[in-house]
Length: 270
Image (cartoon, rainbow, N blue to C red; front, side, top):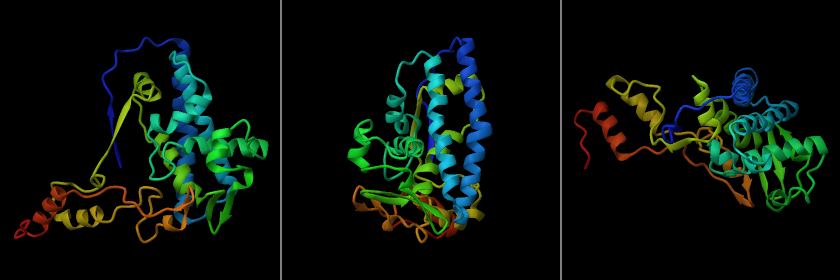
């Protein structure tokens, strides 16, 4: 998981009417479109009940999230093209994952264009063609309740690897002010990987130590967020190479020692 910190304190921004409207539009988009799309997709993915038309719908919504963010950035005085923002999107907004690093939104945008134009024009998207080969609306395929992405040197679960990480990165926010929306839209956050499991247990309650240890030693996959015995990444292909299970977090020696001391008072590290 990731812990978010402000990069540095920013002076209060003088908000113009157009900038306020862009921020309000973006918050409305998150609350009424992005978050419900995320919740629906997460439910279907957990049950392996994803349909192709639903995935294309969510993909369309995510592709348009770039436009809402660019509207805020443009009203804030940031000069860039939509293509420039797509290229740097994953890094700016901390879309996680072990594979397709910093390329998820680029692929989301390409799949959306492929649906509109049937096939992505290689001359217009040269870098995409060099990386993925021909992209068309048929690159996404239903497979036993999942939707797979089939490209020249890639084969993987499109929802778990691409859509859900991007949805969560954009929708897991509770902005309290226009300034917070602006700080996010500017990419003004530092994301640091936490070594421990999220705080679902009281860390000061010794009675939960065994449960905490089980959670700490059973991390989901960084790429698909499935448990180790359910992860299919070893069957998937990324840039011509098979993937593998990669833990989302790794327990430190100090965390293990602390939990063991709660579990067994006689425990001492050798």
